[in-house]
Amino acid sequence: MHDIDDSVVPGSVYLVNVQEKTAVVHAGNDSAIVLSPTPSNDINDPLNWSRGRKLLQIVCVMIYTSSIGIGTTVLYSVLQPISNDTGIPLATLNAGTGYILGWGALINQPFALTFGKRGIYLISVLGNTAICLLTPYIKTEGQWIASKIVQGYLCTPVESLCEVSIADVFFAHERGTYIGIYTLFLFGSNYFAPLIAGFIYDGQGWHWVMYWAAIINFGSLIVLFFFMEETNFVRNTSEATEAVHLSTKPDAEKDDKESTTSSPVSSGDLTGLPKTYSQRLALFGGRYASNKLLITMAYRPVILLRFPVIFWAGFQYGTCLVWYNVLNATCSLILSEPPYNFRASFVGLTYLGPLIGMFLGTFYSGWVGDRFAVRYARRTRGIREPEHRLWLMVVSLLLCPASLILWGVGASKGISWVGLVFGMGIISCSTGIGSSLSISYALDSYKDLSGEVMIAVILVRNTLSFAIGYGITPWLHMGYQNTFISAGFVGLAITMTFLIVIKWGKSWRIASRKRYWGYVADGTLGH
Image 1: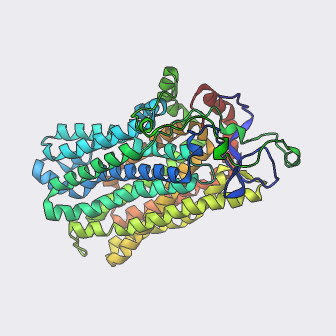
Image 2: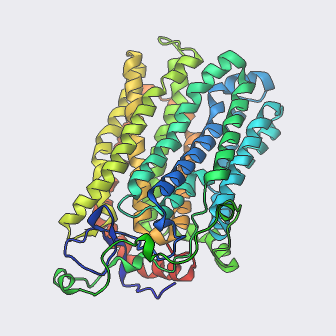
């Protein structure tokens, strides 16, 4: 990797060329947008792929996300029938996956970044297929917990690797859109699974709920084998080349003219031979890091939690997951009891509300967020700060407490089911906004260590999720009204912390710059 100047601010990049600097590469469809990271001249660089090839890659990532999401959550709407059939207590059925999901990334992610992501994805979906097929044959508590721990380990890429794959092929001004799409499919598949599971159970029994999940995963495996490509690439550059120096002055920027091209890298300027289709099908396409770095990547995510930006992103993301878990834990309880008395299939249909809410939330935080970031950068001399995007959380600041109170108080007072489904949709919308913006903020701040940053974020997120799994039952003993009024105020307080990050986030990034660029210099995976 080229020499790195550790005086630059991580995450602060020139996104809009408002001062007509010539030493930059621009987006082909907008001569003012600066491409960050700067693509290499290698024809195999994922940043140089055609638009269609990039979109095919993102489709594959979304297929993977959906299949893993369905395979790991489809059984939650049929836990009671499973308990009745096997004699395994509900408490045990709910346990298992959470013991290792997320923490397993400390092993999986370094291997993916060292040997290739494609092989890890394929092994993950193959393993999920096998677990779904074997689940109907489980008879004991030990077998159940063991299967869920294995499944949790195999499925960790869905939480931390997909975001890195997106960052591999898309530039800073477009990443938010695809992070939003990823968030939609991640949570959307979790909402869709119980929706279809209720109908499958009514018609074929709970065994076929798992068989259909296995069929979906196996179909995804076939598609991914033939169309998903490796996106690891040693670029030998970093975002330090686009980052903003602490000493940068507006007047100096105007005089910084260099006689280099200001046009995007065209196909005629690319060097090297493109990979053949058979080379693209390789399970592991090469080696991208040393053994020393492989070991380092296994523990450095824990060290990165010292960075306030990363810890906050994980905490905010984890809080969003807490509200998602609380909704799932109470939905069936509320709607299957008087005055609603919904059957399992009808309870599943109510998840259409969260699906719509998640779509609206991720569209707002993703597509709208990218355009907001570009417009904001035009007002700040072309400089994009990761904190700019966080202003969009104002909407979540309003929706989060309102939706939680509507859900809990509404259930306590027995309001119309329409009001409850509306509340579910708003909770989901707020969850999508907070999750997508948290991920984008972490990646925008420390892009060159995106793989390790996402592990650190997921560690915080899943630790919160794991804790709420134990705390939700005693919390609900307060009654739906008191529980969700308190949840609403907790959500309001936590969401408001984005104002603190907007104020102090850049100072935190400045304070971490020497340590961060030192970590980047140690690595061989340039982005």
